[in-house]
Length: 273
Length: 290
Image (tube, rainbow over all chains, first blue to last red):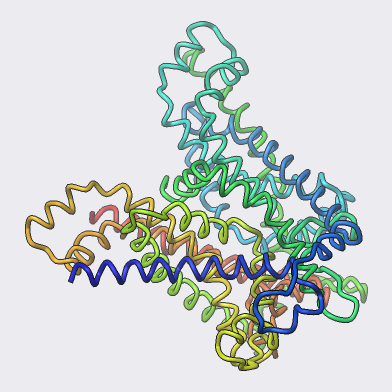
């Protein structure tokens, strides 16, 4: 009985691993396959590997430009939403804020907010302010969209810090800014990392706003450039696979190198209700 | 009020001011504006802009395309969330039971969840390719046109979505499983509980609350899903994968009916808020009972 259950669990794990590993590997393999062999399957394995698709993507497509846009927009979004989110989370967690219940309700409600609900007015707003095709427009929209979850997560992390630390600082006569700088932020660092990763990934992956608020090809972000990847006669599957690999680089780095922080943020976001 | 308290309140207001400003300008204000837009007929290319009252909503009530999109949204949401929960719990239990390879398994799952939805959609578009797709090759050289056949497209989109988002459920459940103390299981073993009894009487009830939360988040995400069908099928073939969100988007930005499209997106908005509200009530009731 036990042995059979064991074997069943092992089989389930192997199956699950295969269901994820095979598609990743297939896409990776496709990105190195010679063009002529792409549509001839089987054989599954190519006769040789080539860097041609990467050369096309890097030298002839808009992907390098899109990578730059996405890196800039996601980084600025993260910084802006932390800059607004840290003080707000501190106020929610520690200070006698008038109207706190209302603000918390608004924060919970806006995490459920569907993007499609505000895309039409935001489009008109971006057009009126001439913010289409600019980093500033997307950064503002992404940051305000990420802000509720940022505050929610950070408020939870602030509550985990012993209050004595801040009290000691205020007895010492430290102002708010130096208390943040020397006491709160160092103690909050792991929580800040978790929150920053989630915000960065949100902005890096976001498609609807980025697609709607860009007009020119040069201002596209990674998901938009990939979704609209041009083909001349046929769909260039090899080039798309290579571009997908580039688009996945930051998520891969985050998942492998910073997994602990990512999982902590993911779980905290769901549990701290 | 003492001077100290007044100072603390002033500090608090200064701290939240940027947030209130940002949410007010870029969430609340557009949220009200969209309601106003939905009451208008706005077709910029024909220079039409007039107040239309509830005409847009009246049209929706008898619009077969709207009801078809509503049905697709319901099938997509129920199908994808149900599969995610079953497979997510199974994956969490299976990984938890392993001694080795946990980190590799978690990394693979996290990667599928963390990469852009557009990348996932492109990956599946290639897997579903009629001639050279791995899915057809694995099924023995059938040439099923997964994304072009009206009967197969919605299930194909659901599977792609489950693949991408099941890890979220699995990771939440796995984290909860790690938090269950070992002596709970030891006590069950001493009492002679079998594997099945341990699973149904101990593990699943302990997962209950986190599962409910996972279902809430996943349902909200499924209701507003856009990227995956927009890239994989664009709502086709023959509108079989057109959800309410895709319909709203096409009305807004492909046929440029700002008023009518806004009315569709207000419906999505109301639907999401209603579901969120119902779940939160359920959760609160559960907390009182527990």
